[in-house]
Image 1 (tube, rainbow, N blue to C red):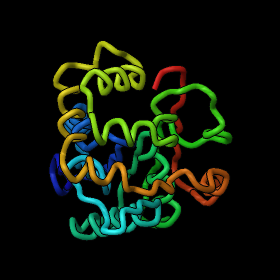
Image 2 (image 1 turned 135 degrees about the vertical axis):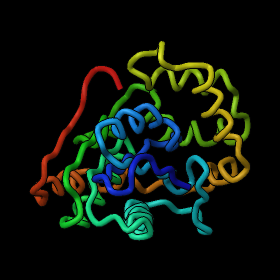
Image 3 (image 1 turned 45 degrees about the horizontal axis):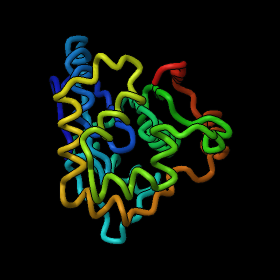
Image 4 (image 1 turned 180 degrees about the horizontal axis):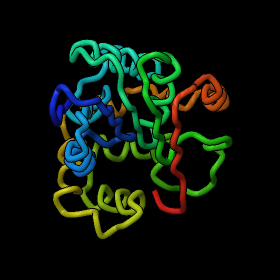
Length: 214
């Protein structure tokens, strides 16, 4: 599943969402960027949003890169600005370094850094990689938990509207999401140092956003 905003003749921007999110989280960005004469492509990555996963229930950076490549080829997009948040940032970096001649710029927001998975605090990222979120949301999907996790991830909790919570809740409760969350083997977090080393292969503008707030 993907959404396509703007004029097909304009320069394309590809926006990649984070874990347990979807293309729907980029409505505001898409609307603003189209005003600046950009075409905006926002896919639901495999296993997330309205997209299905793989039969063997294994997700990887390589597979996500192939999905994006096939999507852009289908849309006849030759070059693209690419941006990603969290998990989407890892995939954006991987894609950019695998497709050096088709990326105009790379923007990553709150994504890879050395020692990322050595954090002791229990937050949104920790839930994902310890499996707590997988098992809890897959079977129970309590709306209050979805709301709590979103508020811990958003820099400005006032922007976490009831509609936003409901959207996340509904998408997580989709039958294929519930089955895939418990079976999926997450390998996105492998070789963090290798991912960081990939920056040196890029000769395009790179924008890295990090701060106290996600």
